[in-house]
Image (cartoon, rainbow, N blue to C red; front, side):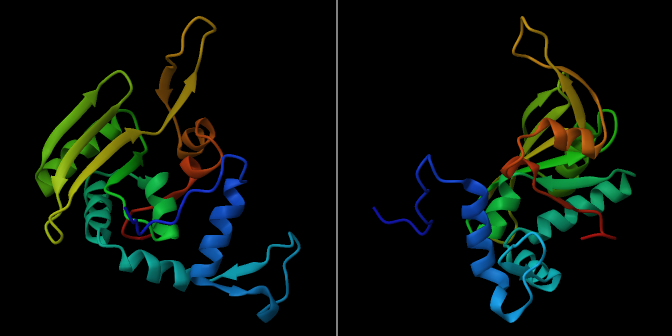
Length: 193
């Protein structure tokens, strides 16, 4: 069977290099057109190119709606992880993760978005402050799974794989994630999006 997605590189491939090359080939100018920066990065990207990519995404209306819902609730909200990666790599995805700032904000924002967009609750985990909802995209008809979590800090004891969780900042939340795909984030507040 054929697939529109590019094949995954081997396990020995350095993922940041793969992502960088694919992103650069999509919307960055070749280095020979510009002076190479001090980190010796081969491409320079413009924000207008990133905005153009974002505006071409079929679910940009959902992202805007979630940003508006967050603003109405007095919350900060970010789309994070694989969706941001797939956006940059031009890969389709219907599983979208969000982080909001504040105690129980993930649960609160999930409910506000469910009321705004319709849909049904897939799961709700009070202990970890996460909730997922399933909505049918009004334009494409695609079923989207939107997962919300409040920014948090995690610590682990030696005798458990389950973390002790406490509310945290966006920086705290980013630190608990691996440094690759899961650390990518876009602010959804209308003033920043």
